[in-house]
Length: 235
Image 1 (spheres, rainbow, N blue to C red):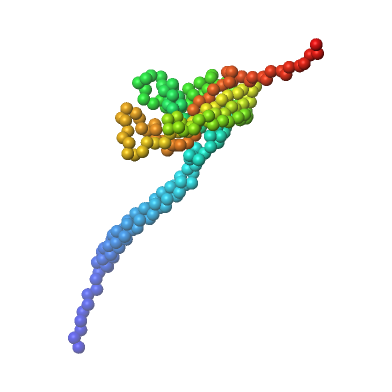
Image 2 (cartoon, rainbow, N blue to C red):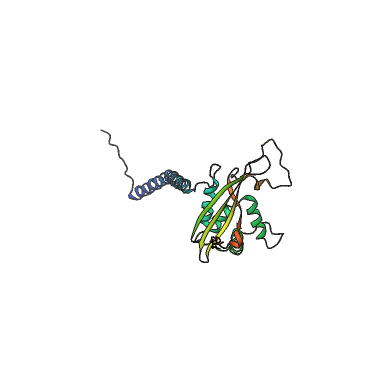
């Protein structure tokens, strides 16, 4: 019989082959691992974004006021904002468009200033209210004495509602008259806007809602005592 001689590889050749196999395996695992890690990172980011969106949606406060909100509720909300501790920012948001525009213009230090910061507007508003309506800002409790709808929409004038309010503060009891008005509806889309006016002031999402137009103190906000009853004296 013919014998066949088989040469076995040396130890050095086996070691070299083994190292090449290990390198090939590392390349394969790395090529597969990188997309997997990217996919895992993408999934984690999507889940986190979904939770963030869900959280922000749940935390969004309800819109106030709404078209169906009565003026008495708007008045109660602003009185609550004026009470101790006062929330001037909330009170400012419950003023009408025209009143907020007047407050903003009064807070400008220069006519060339486009729009002062909100902090400056609220600071100037609080100072003006403490001067013109003493006792209203930071009052302890309030009482609505009467309410009256003084006008309805007639095609030109906006609906108005007026009420008398008495507040108890550190200086005693003071009275005020609150005037509320319903915001106008936006013009139909078929009507072209006049470029002279800023349409952003007329369309803010609160069309048809009640807001506070102005606050007037009665006799400087001081309490008016009722006159003493007359006594009949025998002749």
